Amino acid sequence: MSASRVKPLKLTEAAQAMHRLRTVLADLRAVGVPRLSDVRRDHLVTVLDQWKTGSVETAACLITALKQLSAHGPFLSWDRLTIHPWPGRSAAAVAGRPPRSKENSTDRIPEHIMSPYLRGAVFYVTTASKDILAGQRVLEDLRAAAERKPYAYGRGRAMFASLAAVRGTAGRGLPALPLEMAHLRPDAPVVDGIVQAPNVTFIELLIGGYGADPGLRRMIDEAGEELGYEPGGLDSHISPWPESGLPWRPRLDPFSVKTELQYLRTACWAVIAYLSGMRDPEVRELSRDCAFTEPGDDGRLRYKIRGRVYKHGKLSGDEAEWVVLEIVHQAIEVLRAINNCPQYLFGWGPRETGFAASGTTSTISSAPTRGCSSPTTPARSNSMTTRTPMPPTERKTPTQRRMQRRTARVCRGPSPRSSSEGLWPGTSRISPSASSPEPGSTNMPELSCLRGMSGHRSPGSPRRSPATKRPPGWTTSKTSTGTGTTAAPPPAGPLGGSRRSSSGSAASSGICPVWSRRPPG
Image (cartoon, rainbow, N blue to C red):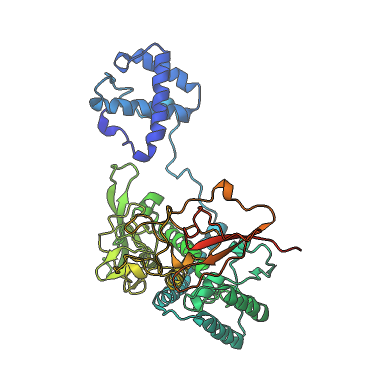
């Protein structure tokens, strides 16, 4: 049998083909053939009789593996078959498997199951997709506003008070924690499928990205008890379900938008696959520019898809075209709006960084996933899913920005500035001792914001030795000797003695532990 008639071996079948090849080689060794070059026709007849004792399908697979091994003989340098196993006959014919009928062996999905499923998928593509994309745009606007918000102490509480007043006037409650995240508040009851706990992260986004401090958290809990809770909470339109006239789902929130995007991708796949007759690998390998139209012989516009067929073809596939309905093109346009891979229609990744496009940043990811090409490849700009890029330094969460401002306000941090004495700002020269750092030493001086904190030890000073531990019945008080403060006189010891430092020196650091007798009672 010539190599051209052997079915090409695909990479996805490599592990299974290797397992079958090991079985074939073991069976050949069992009949007394240690090398492939020693295989003769009688050996093939013997091993075939053994294979036929089992399943016919298994025997056909092993025969196919032996034929593939013979076809790859020119690429084997150490050992190879010198004969073609059963030339001119297929593996099914050699194994004795009866020919299959022209009809597909897989049963069709029953009509009473496929009909409502397809109707729901079409609704997602034609109607629900608009609601989901609208909610996605509202979330993007809220995140962009949170990144640009100015810092103002107490502004978060004022913004929440305004939000609560507006929702109270409209008769609405606060956004409730999603039911899928109810485990975060196990103490919160669930009433009619609504968790009676606030979605604090979403509320922070609604008030401009201000973090919920303890005072604001109490305000949220009190407002929730008064106003109640509602599912979702995003102010975006929800279309009615055609059969009932009611909204097809409750209001959206960040969690449900992410979930609905996954459902929308699945619905688009179902519409494309069912209404075109394409196989799953052929659908998943479609490119972003696969849809096109051309006039038919009767003058009507025909909707088509350009892709590749892989079954019984080359490893790279063969080019093919499918005539489809207009709804299939609508599904492709939806996928182009929610997915961001510049090469494949179903490729997508995280939304934070976006594929680099000329002058814009796609709000859907830039990380090349699912076979996407390099992120340097220009992405298709979409007016619904693109925005002006923000500088990388401004892309911080509200909590990160709040902690950064708090750190800068409370502790300015020692910056080495030039001074006549070579000191760091906020520090003063202390009496020289064996443990105090010399000018120009690599030991970092003590930060002024840590002076007086419990358990702080100045850099360069040794740890308290076991001999200086606090005796029973004695307490420890700390006094500061930093710049701009007056050292309080320490209380006298039990015998009128002076203070005693942890390092044996009276002034080895800005914090001076002092021992004193604990008062009775």
